[in-house]
Length: 214
Image (tube, rainbow, N blue to C red; front, side, top):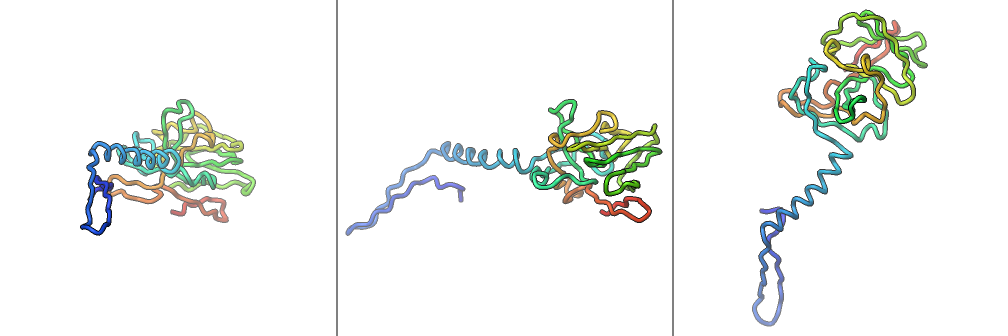
């Protein structure tokens, strides 16, 4: 059964036998009609609701690998702010035509410090600071001490493969308006199918460590 009927039917009743007058519609007309409706449905979805992306590069190993197919949710952040631990896709600040995938580490108002491969956060709710427990990291060699204070609508993002990632440590903070959305579903390969792939949250212990809660 086709999606659209290719026949226009008029049914007339009289004292005589019922008759049907059938007019054949050109197949090309049906194709054009279907294409227009598909475009009207697909384009708004891709622009405002969700977009497909293919991972390229090693900056998020082992959480994501090149060739994996993701659907990115563009709606959630219209109603709520990104959370620490979210995996997001955004426009690269130095070239908005490119899209990057990273993990949110620092939120607006945070003062973030990196020393000896450890990330420490100080903010209004935690004036004494806390250190993130990050089991998702593939590798992170010790570097020189680094500190960044985030302003309103500013985020600090890093790849899980820290030694192979171009992120906020090198090109600066990420402005909120450049965020496209969060990784919602990993569709391909089928063996890696996952909802909110890579996302994590943190619970704050009394010892001021932020322990990941998957």
